Length: 108
Image (cartoon, rainbow, N blue to C red; front, top):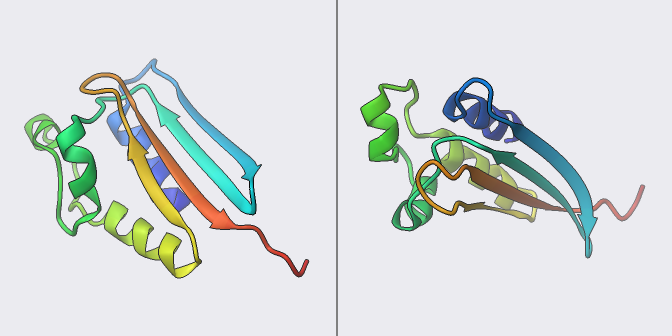
């Protein structure tokens, strides 16, 4: 799941722009945040990107590789572990933030 999210950040962020990874404890969750300065998303694109084979028009126009399965699989893994995943973006060319919440282990 994390490999896919980081791979997307690398793929969709132009050379010379930043990618940041942060892990924090938030309530009873581990919160993993991946922020990039990449191509960004339009508000109407965000909700559909967790569907199978869904890629944005901007990605297809740039001819970037991929099938549109990564976020679908990442969401399935997050949910299977009792967590969730969401996307945030201020718009095209404004970067994207992916937030993954997973329950903290209580019996360690």
